[in-house]
Image 1: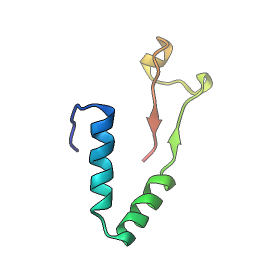
Image 2: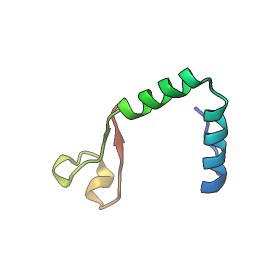
Image 3: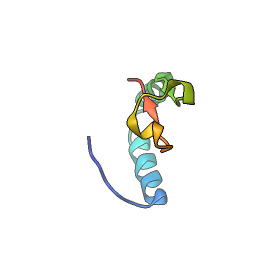
Length: 63
């Protein structure tokens, strides 16, 4: 996993260039993989992280 800091425009350009380097079948498989992964945005009823109770915004992703 790589962590980098850049502007939104630069990050979008980098992701797009990486995606366009893939073969068409790889692009399709990448798309299917991304849309099939469920992302859970918790409601107040499902808060379990200490930051939830502080009113901080927390995103959960089930992988």
